[in-house]
Image (cartoon, rainbow, N blue to C red; front, side, top):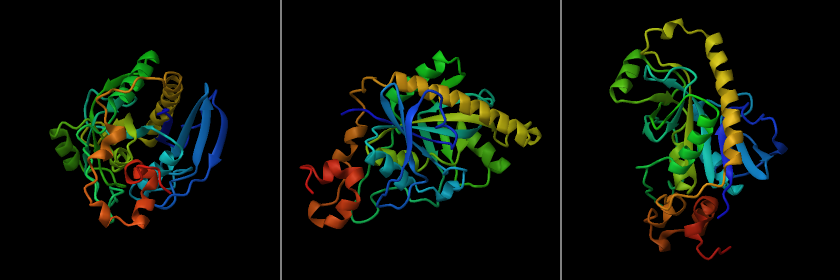
Length: 293
């Protein structure tokens, strides 16, 4: 299978020097409209698909992101690997603003979002024991190292519902759980990517300390915007390096692209064509094994 990279991130991350053949493309999905059009880019003969998670101009609140449509749209475009670039707050003193964290675990505290493609008639249970791709993390780590960007390889991301930030009591609770960073967008995104058999990696960019930190109240919006801008520049350079090295060998122990083989438990005679068609992009490999129309 030919690998193709998809990027989910902030509105400005697709404006990268050296990329060509850029165009916006409307993709329709059975799950409704994605956050925005897909932005198709080319760099060194590699095609990349980018989707602004909150829409251009940041118009969609975290709870209202159509995560299912975003993942379906990327897979329609032939994407096999997804890198999620996300701003986060830090829950550790040694993860200061400006540092990147390559996430390998999640705690999902969201409660107002649809978290599966398989919520109607067809039931599937995919494993989330290892929610991110080791190979993609290695690729991101190599890029950040070559760019001299301070990063941590591995960490736990707590996904909160938002849009409000944490209370101090919540922040202290999450610290007691040994959580590294906190954000509002990577769940159920990571779960849906796994259900769609897409390898997934989160690059978490620390913008500030969460409210547990004694200096939290002294941070102003200008300081946060400065860090956001600097982080975005680092992320753009990281993307260029990743695309240049995007011919990595897939770990033979990574079963993401075949995780639905044992996940779907519904009897085939209970599946209607209507529901199977809705899942064609996400699960067509197993629901239509002979590529039937």
